[in-house]
Length: 340
Image (cartoon, rainbow, N blue to C red; front, side, top):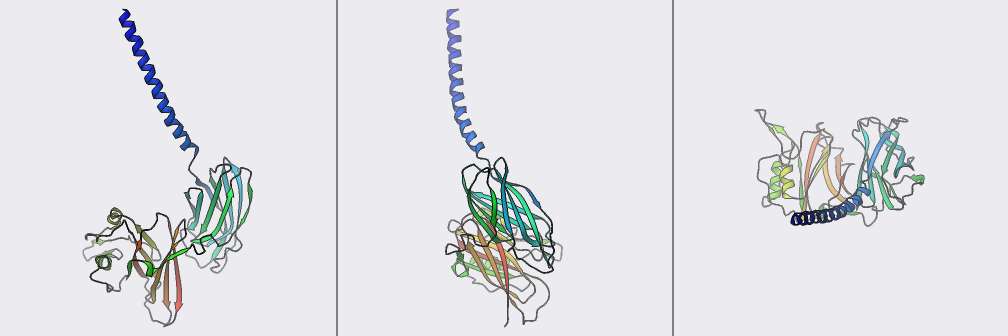
């Protein structure tokens, strides 16, 4: 009997020791989890827009009257009211995205359509948070690919005020690095419906894109052939950023073997832009490193003296850059009228 009681006591001591150790380990894990929970992910919520306030019978594209009002509503959320921001009269959906990198908050305001030949001022409102009392933040607000505001502040639950709109991010300086055509390793363009361009036959990557960089098409039997891009709107720009062999394979919808690319050293960029008719040419592709984002500008020349057929021309291009950082790319298309 005594032996049995001793065994029971010993068993209880072992169980209690195990419980103590287990609770200690759980507590350590719990402390770590509490730390994560206390640093909640910053979000953008409760977005609203006023609708068109005053229709301009032209493409005003002028944000000089825009301003930003801000105040703290509740629970560490900063309310931002972007007043008199210009969007198209037929904007489709107006919205805003958010990206957070450390103490940098990047907000991109956008419209999904741009179909009317007029603009309107709108008021946009949204909440950003939760922010931490006493912590320093830098907020960047961009609109339709243009940079309108950067502000540095230390968050206080009682803060309110106004930021004026302007187009000077701190990156529009010598730190704003242009990665132009001549700085790329190599690249090329393909104009839809114009036949295959001449390329260096000794370059497997150039030969591959000469044959495979095109829009989807159907043969006489009704079979569809696609490579990198789905059928989209005629005035739609697109861009694929590829940083690994797997991403290259995932992006390609064709049947040919892919050429080798050393993705430890390079980033492959595959893009699509468009010309209003056959008098448009792709002059230059410029990738700008704006520290928190890349801006990709496609510069087109419009030869106004040339006769042209009216059909929209899809223009595809590819560039191989020295390895790029992982960050968002904002697309920008510009057209310059020129004479022969």
